[in-house]
Image (cartoon, rainbow, N blue to C red; front, side, top):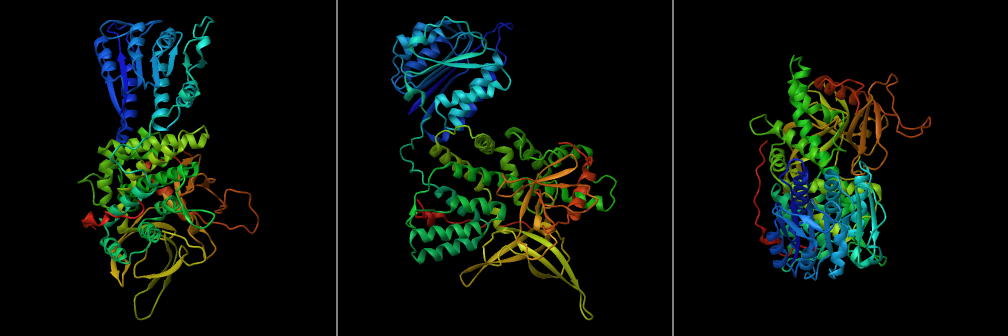
Length: 637
């Protein structure tokens, strides 16, 4: 087991106190916690480091010490600890006895001469130090950006340094100079906030955080844990899935066929915003000879992870918001003078203007916690009561924040194309974070999303009118089939057209098949937060085309395509005298046109409810416990 030793020391003198040192200490600690489940590194943390404690920690962990980090006041050959000044010569002597040392990070002022002392004592490993005074906040920003790149995004020491430099350069002048043995005795003048990097060789500079699987844990197999956890989550809400699985096991199909069957059954119980990116992840890799090959770790796979994460978040926020807004919008339509208290409107207003796609992790989690308070027990009756438990988990568990931090940073790196770290490790860690999200999605087995386009009223002389709805279930699209296309459905009630509706369902096992049946109780309208563009198309026989709300800017509604967020945004003007919108491309006379009047009306009601300017800137589900002994030979491992 490897060890990382973190040492922080401050000064009691108010004039010399480092005001953000504690933030650096706590920030690095949080980043390390995100790797704690790996089980390959032990963290030793001294928030108030004394000379005796530092020496004892180094001596106790000499064989396993991998990283030594110090932050605090320092000098050319000293480190100022909590009790007294530590000699650089003595520190170098202690670290010389650590054969596995990969990095010494001395994040204090003017620590350059420590490099010479460490090299003279034959200390193996890279060294990061400074030649001049370093500003307190700059030192914190630099070290947190470095460890985020090293720990979270699996970059090498050299790559992590470059990431830290770019992060700090946004706000501070900074330079990092690489040196070798010949330039350790530095004499030329340097600037403030300049770090130096010493690496004994290229192999040391390319060192990455270890990713070895701990003894006793199974080797990582792509998709196995994700598939298993989704299956376990879904069958808690759909007993037919367990029954079908038990029937399938009796057939003793080849493992590849079992995996395809499982993929199909899992995906068929999830709405399209989750289904489509998940389908791309779970799809087997096929070689040129038509045979299955191990799923490769690629940048494309990481992109699919981010797409699935963003789709899950979009669906969660949209559903929570739709649930929160449903009551106030109804009261607004009934001319209630106070449909929503101003305090609540103020909390919701940023979501319907800025959106949530680009929120930093802490603000996104704060947003989810705010929405949880709207649906907390005792607040109101919910169309989706299970979402209350999910919102509570987000409110109480740090695992969700850690996953959001991971995917937020991964998306930024993918967008920048700025040298990802170890792709294999990132794929493994990304799947672990997906499991944290997807293992809470089992309740979707009891619901489905449907897009309603038009409604035809048919009147009869001797019986009640009939409502013929053009609708499509938002789950999957198969080329060359009718699935995913609008078809007529005759209903006794009048539902809402040109909208995406959430409908409750139940499943029954009929002839060894799981059959969906709608449950009485109406619907929850998710529009206009999730929309089907083809529900507004004036032509017929359209396949659904889903978008989720992005933001409202300068009188325009912006939407991003579900499962393909990098495609061009759909932009719709709130006030259009022509009542005629085109795709956001160059158009021709024969191009399809769309009628967005219903969409505009839906947003107008929301804007009225929340006092947003039109030109604003930017049933109780009974779970079915399942015996998990039948999963001991779950395929794919």
